[in-house]
View 1 (cartoon, rainbow, N blue to C red):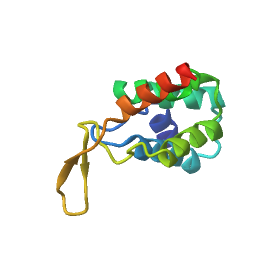
View 2: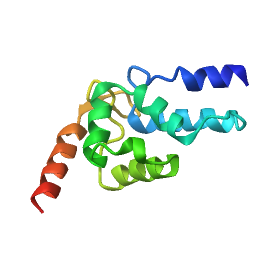
View 3: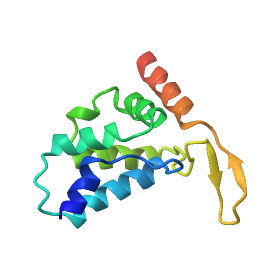
View 4: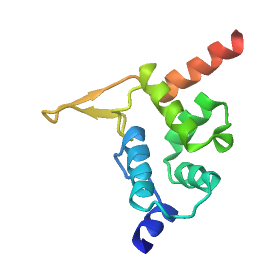
Amino acid sequence: MVEWRKKITHFEQEEDETLRDTWERYSDYFLQCPHHGFEEQFRIETFYGGLHQDDKILIDSLCQGKLMNMTPPQVTELLEDMESKGYDWGLTRSGKRSNARGVQSVGVSPLLEAKIDRLIKALL
């Protein structure tokens, strides 16, 4: 239990880990340590604090800076909504996507898409 609590409290997104993989790995820690005793707010703060800056900006854009007011199920819903709207979860921090053959391809920046979505919402 101590090992899992340490993984939770010192959580960080890995170098080339996608946002989706990061959330899944973080959520798995709580499944492995069901008696962790952490409040939901702590869970969200720790997840957000461990993200790379570009993913923080993307999430802030999509939830209009209100991530800290969300519950873990709401965060999961937000991330699933990102996927359904076509945000490229497969992008690594370097902006490249690996396919099964190891070939790298460059996708549209999810950060740029988030900013455009936010501008459109502001105009409507």
